[in-house]
Length: 232
Image 1 (cartoon, helix red, strand yellow):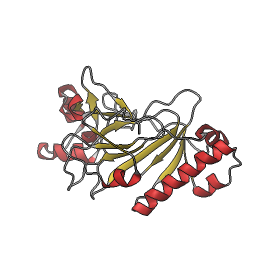
Image 2: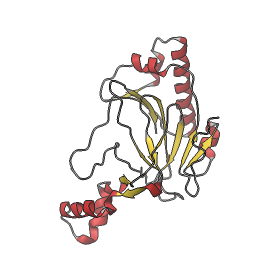
Image 3: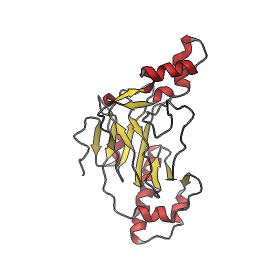
């Protein structure tokens, strides 16, 4: 097993799917990695899939219809197995072929798209699972190396000018529009790249969560390269 992440207290490293879903988050640890060096040609799969929109959901049927080499077929079997493992666990995995996500350009002082460091929130107990098979991989950031954007004075003042309701409801306004989910890296912050092939479980903010939610962001895509991403 590759232990390249094991020196970081934020990350738990495991070697099986069972460990991935059964290891508890604790203290600073809010990301768990099933560290893998996958065989197979995932780029071949990307080259044979058809991008219909900037984000195209790839079905199991789409995968099964592809004419692939031996290495391409190995990659397909890995993806199908990951989808099955997550479905059997009770998750709803999606495989996406990605050119890019939509950018949020509405506010010039605060981006709220997935390229911004953010946490996920849910009303029920859940986790975020993701694996990048091809293309650029996401980053996470230790919580102590980031600051909530709504607490940065100049951003908070601009949000107050934007808000036109009663002062007592300002915090609710920030939450309703998801401004509170976004974070700014502190000076000298050290993002951790999630790498290709690793299946990750990230902590989500929800009422029963015992740890801080994991701060993460989507990567800027490499020119001329699509991403193949499993997420749920």
